Image (cartoon, rainbow, N blue to C red):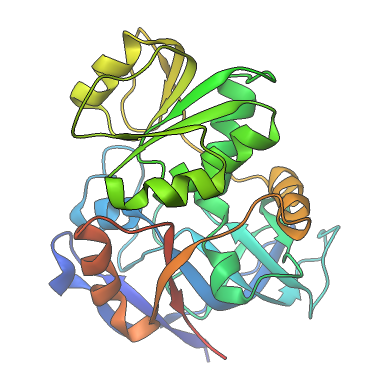
Length: 300
């Protein structure tokens, strides 16, 4: 008899009303994979886009689709070719696969061992689940795409959000001088993270900078290209700037784990919701103005 797990799924694209809590088949364990018993799952803007069908041109979708790409939990089982983990290890991972269907809004996820890192000792599961996608995005943009050097100025848009609040801190750790855009209520928060200046994105011009991260696109991106020496966007490909789509990497996540444990990078968890309130979590995210991240608690 096939085992089942509880999961939040969609059977068709649409609004928050399409989210359903149901039993689904337990994911299969492949040879170089780990099965994680999920304790918490991160909630990201891409989850809402997936729910609406906006990822359909990029990825095959297997319905019912379990949403979510971030997970923190405990290793329950490992494949025979797994190298680095054993049952009982507390871990977290960015769990994106090459298709959309077996996500993390559920009790279990199976991913290659190379996606996984050990949980930071100073984070609980909900805090850890808020890290992988957003922090890896910021890290890969700054280190790989922009190749930030000490002393450079870096403009970070939406700097109080999920990717942004990590980008500010990582830029600072690389020796750069981050400048963040956000609403005025978040300016003190940005300075606490390490921004040398905070700008109201509704008013004024952007300063000249060595590099910039764009999570917004459109007019903001166009204005940024006129003031930044080099720019990477995570939402809009183009010929005049870099574009980055985050990759799973347990090795890079382990680097971030070290920085988190040393207190050099911190996680701001704005809110948590139980798994069966995933629709409320999406509503909170879609309202905007989330500071840092949101997570779903899946099990004790």
